[in-house]
Image 1 (cartoon, rainbow, N blue to C red):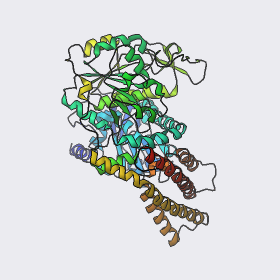
Image 2 (image 1 turned 90 degrees about the horizontal axis):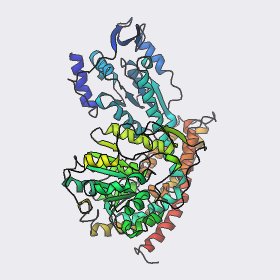
Image 3 (image 1 turned 120 degrees about the vertical axis):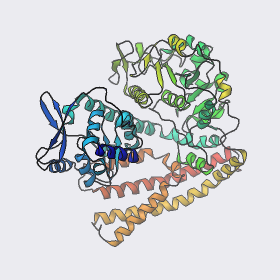
Image 4 (image 1 turned 30 degrees about the vertical axis):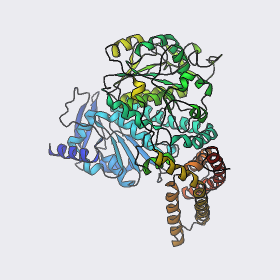
Length: 619
């Protein structure tokens, strides 16, 4: 067992995030695993299925077969990322890393038995060298999802090489199908996020610029997390109230949980909750175009509110209660936090405000999360709780964008792609956070796998009745803003200086535009080997890094996401075979620089006006 022990040591040193108990005993043996030697005496693993042995490599020459497998990948470039399901003998992973040492490789082994067999028979240190991420062990499922969301974005989604290890599907067909579905869900969510950003671009830009003048005077969501450390909250419940139509069924029960559970309510559900006599402990609003009429009620205006830097500034500017911002949503907010050694906090989201609410109470440490109003579908064709919007019409089920999914009663209910994406996000978070008990007390809507389904009355009886009362509103009330008065004055001076900093940035961008123009000309002339070309590439790379690290680039990107995505689409377009990757990159870089330069003048005018409106400079 010395090989096994050596592998465990390597695993712990190089992949500490993989949960692994070397004394773990498998509960059952699903596979009949065999060790086979090829003709060159390489030890291979195989699995016997229906009297047939499926080996994870060629019985003639495993090395040669692995090399042929690696050679199948075409159009590999510096942006290519490999996602491989199955470890097998490790030989395929090793050959892939040897041929593409600079590319990232995500290796997932969801089958515990096969991974144990690998550790017992193969040399992990030999196979796992290079830029290899591993999803395996007791948290393989969660790591697979987490690693994909770290590396997959709109830029590289077409550069992903997703592959199943040879013969692995014959051994683990259901696992292969499940993990392929998780991959496709990830890519789908990336596309949905891109479409949302493009549609809301102008509004998001306006909100971020204006909200910067509120951000530094308000509170951080980190202060929420700190506040709940004062109580033993692991045994207490938080209730996330969304605005689905089923909320009308059980809203009257919610009052019984007041002060027994922590109640966070999404913006569109606030009217319904207030009408029922419930006092939320926290509200949340992140939508750039959220209807301000939802916050006209004076009671609602005084509820502590979590927001986004991109949230509707008209609501944020008029809110009278405490306002809590994430601090890592933009380069500029992050830069301010780093300057003053403050905590940087973001909120994982599946795209909906209720997803954000779920993440917040999870980070606050509540051991049980109860979902209500979380239909994620349109039961009886309804869209929201009745109090949300006056005269709201239901859906037209005949529209092709709607499709049926399983509901909590075992029947069918209509939903659409974005809502189904939110549902899948919940299922992923439940897998990633097994320590949190999630109860679906919506009493309607789409089924969220991994939740306990019960009525709200049952959920409150089970989790709240024996709890002492806590005044959560007082508990989460901060004693000071995230920046003190002296720091606020320094930040205001920094804001005043931004105009001159943008002028300097414009000059750097013009220089970079010239770099890209020259690169494009040299690429077309095929002068890559000249020393002048190499010096130009180095100069362009250094300037690109300098620009990337400038926090004010955030402002310039506000009005150009659609341009940037178009450039990425062009770079991923294989229609024009005459354009090399380098020419596409030079053309795209030039296009983005030109747009940034135009945006600087737009941003400077808007920022100057905001400085006047906020009385930092005179007109």
